[in-house]
Length: 161
Image (cartoon, rainbow, N blue to C red; front, side, top):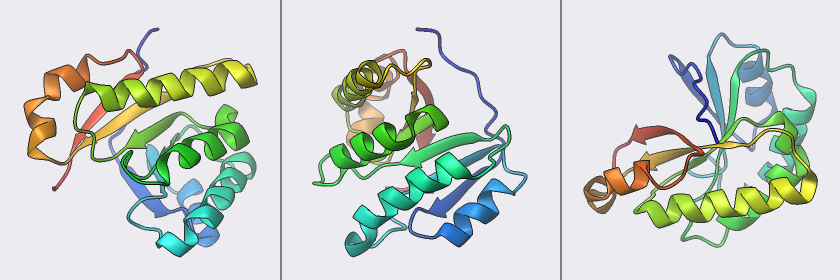
């Protein structure tokens, strides 16, 4: 699997619960838009936000933007359904998923394996990339392992933890 090279000069974060903000993001000049299911969405709105993101990915004109969805932390009860619902609903319209609070290469491998299974099931023609957020000291200690964990990994972002 060859790693994609995408422009990420301007990354725009948008709450996945807001159709209005997603429409504005699609019309923006940003290179990269990530539709957020994590911090920007209240727990009571997470399930509904998945459906709004699927609809936005399928219907809005995103131009040449990198379209990304930031899922919830893999240790939460939301993460696997974030991946399954969004990929099954709009995988052909999505470029990457962003995995927050990654701690080791195992986290990247888990997300990549789940993506492989869904893509095979759906017969998607192109692989969905992975972006990771390094937010903890443990992750920083494991950064080399994380970066080598899977060829799907396109981007490593160092965030505040």
